[in-house]
Image 1 (cartoon, helix red, strand yellow):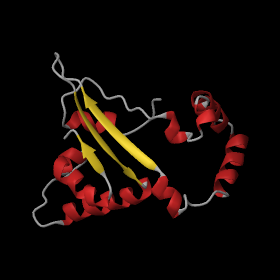
Image 2 (cartoon, rainbow, N blue to C red):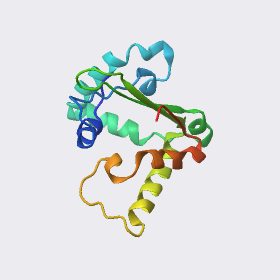
Image 3 (tube, rainbow, N blue to C red):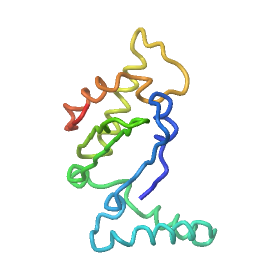
Image 4 (tube, one colour):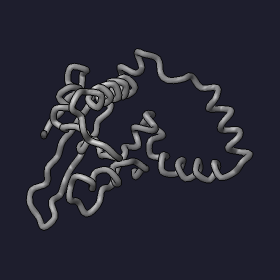
Length: 155
């Protein structure tokens, strides 16, 4: 399913593409297989509900009662995969890279700290709003994630 993300804005800054379409598996937002097919319908219902101040208030209260995040064991069991595929203009073989791991919360912390350390390093001279691949060497950045359980294929 389509979802809003930053890639349609950031990728064209450093790759000559006609467009970027971010997709998300329905299992990502609805891990219960029996109701996974309902995600598109439920998404529409949630959007409509959020337009109502009364229903939004009820949803806000319900969300406030939820825990801050999953338990550590659940975080380790949860897997994530990001696939980027290019289709060159004018033909040519498509290229694909796959990055996968466990614990999206933990790897988010690792990537944030690593990015901050790179930007704070002596000699870092890039400024302004940058796509990640403009701010850092993509291969080196991904390689730094491998010790944290991330796998990278196709680079």
